[in-house]
Length: 364
Image (cartoon, rainbow, N blue to C red; front, side, top):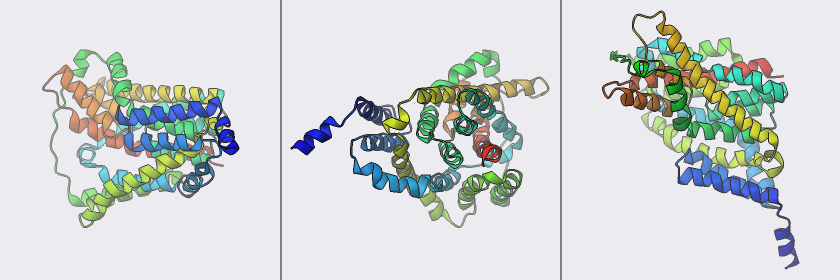
């Protein structure tokens, strides 16, 4: 009985706050359907690691963390599933959409400059990658660089990915006129050969890895997943990668990331600052894509709907669908889905390459 009281009295207000944060993540996952596959296990894991004398922290969660996060295995395996989900057809039909994916990564480097004012360069670089709008890339880069803020970075990256439908529309409307939002972009259906679809992930892997060797694993696993999808002889394996593998790894990823969600590591002013910087990164990413499209319109005969530039972030396919929806709101006959999805998948590639550039610049 004395031991029971000792355990109960061992709870601190910090532990209780973290348990409430865990409950909040679970609530957002269930009630608001915000990235439920990740936020739910992350929230429950947060509860487990903040119970005093918990054997979960020093036992299974620690083992999962060391087996899958410390060596970047879980994020890389998740990239196989993501790659298997992506159809690069719209991008291959209109390769110039790659430019928008690159432009929408501006928030990473803008945030890097801001974060370096408050944090050491390694942590600043890790925080900046939140702007990739890509949870696995954020985890892989922050962990590779050895940042002590992996937990806060992960929460910020996935939370803002889930909040894309709330964050992006006001920024897009602020930077565009209704006339610009009504610009129609007829989609020309172009046939993409099977050979092209097969060669694309191979060529992207070789070229991107040659330019940024530190991105080889990130881009390679993503493109390998896509090759499984497009080769045409591994349909069952592709389906497994998209569903079973992606879901299983996401569960393990959410639970193991909670290893960094203890009150000692999370309840700091730095955490709030990281969340604020992450929000800035997302906003600047969105603005960068939109403004780049507006710049191209100054020299282009065929006008581009600047909203598609906002889809250049890696939040696939949410961002592409948001742009399409906003196009329909401005003009019920304005169908931007194929253009915005093409930009969206280009953002997936660009974010991984940006992560590799960050690793190239700051890896010891």
